[in-house]
Amino acid sequence: MIKTAMPPGKKPDNSLYLRLLANYRQNKKRALRTRRAFPITLPYLVPMMEKAEADGRPIGRRDSAMLAFGYRFLGRSVEDANLEIEDLTFTNGGILVWLPEDKTHDEEQNLVLMDRPDIQLVPRLTRWLDCMAGQGITSGPVFRHVLKNGLVATAETRNKTATSRGLHLRGQTVNERVKHWFHAAGLVTDGRHVSSQGVRAGAATELAQNDATDEELERAGRWRAGSRVSREVYVRPARAERNDPFARIPVHNPGEGKAT
Image (cartoon, one colour):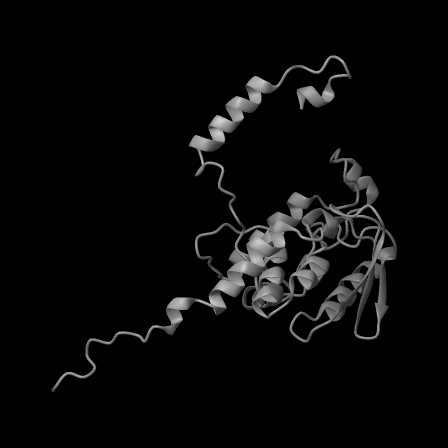
């Protein structure tokens, strides 16, 4: 960061730093291990959405719509939070999303998200948008802060918190709500941590487990072509599960064949 910030001709020699970093990576491999979020697949996502909307509160409607959208969109938290009402067009059986840019694409994209009976993206998103429309909100951020009285926070209220996000949720807020509903639904993990990244990971995991090609997964998650993440984190483990060579070995049962 220091080297990048310095003007041309004044950048420091970073060879010592690079040697130290290489030595650290060589000797601290466990410390550098990437910690993956627990994949929130449909058996986890659906109970979370149902729990969120069980009491009919506006914040629960917002969160169930946000969970459904995050799964089907394979969204990063900030992408979900940056979504605007004007970016959405409801189509026959789905939603057309206009995305101005994302982490790996500078150009705009028009993405078609077809709905599913289990996710119910269109009904859940419609209920939340109707809730906001009832309060006179028909433009701007889709997912907003909801006060304890059920009203959506106004710009004046948000300005008092001195946040740079304004009416938009922070990515961290999305993360907190995912954790909240996961535990509220009484769900447990296999030891991996719960985060909003798990919603994206859950969708990618289920695509990989159900024979999505590398290219289909890259397009769905908007990874770069040839992305190591989509292949190594999702596709290869799913294929390894299906093609485990040890599955060919008959299960040993010491009780079989013995005289009784």
